[in-house]
Length: 124
Image 1 (tube, helix red, strand yellow):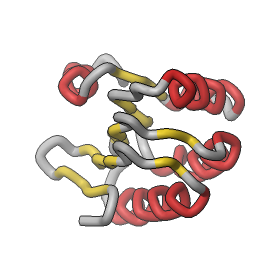
Image 2 (image 1 turned 60 degrees about the vertical axis):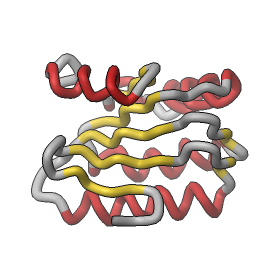
Image 3 (image 1 turned 120 degrees about the vertical axis):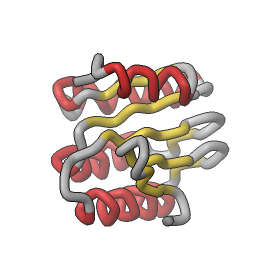
Image 4 (image 1 turned 90 degrees about the vertical axis):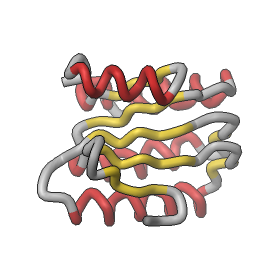
């Protein structure tokens, strides 16, 4: 189990919690490297489920660049509880800028809603 992320064998997803953090370049690097390490250790691609409650992006362009490195290793990114409007806009902007739409990038209100969508198969 990492500082921010862990693989849930029962749900078959990587959970990441960045709630309350300001995503500086350093924190972005730590989180992305942690997820890459976990994703590479798995026999198949899984969804990354990220808690964005009260989190803020300090450098959206850097975040987008780093997420682009992660996309080939996972099934998609499922975010939830992104409460800050500027963070939601920045996430969406980076999704469009880096053409992540085809990579299954979603924002849900709650963890329960995000997991229900994954379990139902509606995310692919």
